[in-house]
Image (cartoon, rainbow, N blue to C red; front, side):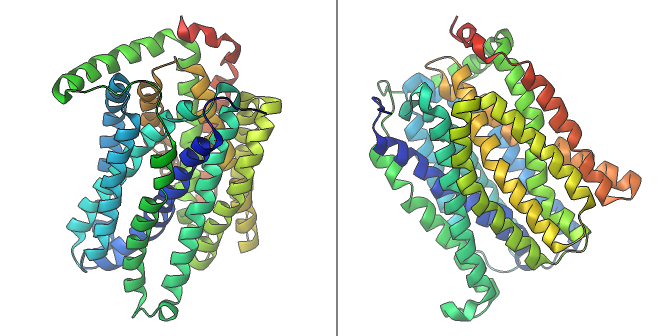
Length: 423
């Protein structure tokens, strides 16, 4: 199939950014930072204190990005600045991640601040990365291009994480003194990886529209006005509004399973080594699965494919409540990998079809804002259920409510009425 605009280089250059920054989300956010914060930087604090401050770091970073994302997107759309804004946040994230290498033992406050700004850099850059998709892909290729990005992200993030895990388990193989030195070096390697593999996007992706001079003071005010107008616009666009409501619910379920899986496994008595290997398995299964879902969506449609993914997640919750052995946990991790990339990639490409032309950064600001609030309802539901019932197994079943509610709303999304978006 011939793609007239743009060429294949720009598509792969765009997708390689997922390969680049997924090293941060996998190795830093999900892997090493939470453990290292508790055992190294905040070793002088009690367990409850270190947990509290780690929660504060995650909450502050996520909240700031969630509030900033729609306004930043509105500003970028005004001046065709999506690519420049992406690079600015990327540089912030890279510098903050590299600086973690220099933080000495006990300096938990410094580590926390660097982590907050690194998370802002990571999440902020993703607002503009998602918005640039419409500049590198035609509508008929959105599913495949979006899936390509997620697939490369899973394999790239998984490779970097695998190297860092091996380096941490066997530091002597790399001429390092101990595990703590290996973990600190991992932060530096992630920053280097992120920077090097951002180069393809810099060199090959060209944003549509003329880059305009932007006066930031006026643009911030105009951005807020546009943000309010966009919200009003979304309220009038029933298709977009329904999709965002559905997405908020089911992606909260997806995020909850990702973030609570390790804690859930520990509560069932599984060894930490089993959980790390399962995390790696999920990454490498998600790589080919995301590509396959891109092809499936071309036959079944993105909406129907998302519905299938949600059904699989409901089965995962039921299965997870009854698992007994480490083998069950590995199978569960593989099942998550099969649908995780599909539901994320196809949600992004379906949303890109629904939003008005020329307002992608602004509308993706809303989309990313909802994504940043993901895994808020689910963990609260799991925690409350576990505390009231005394059963960790029962707590995972309550997540089915989020998937079911999301599926019901998504079912009502009339994709064929997209023409109302541009009216």
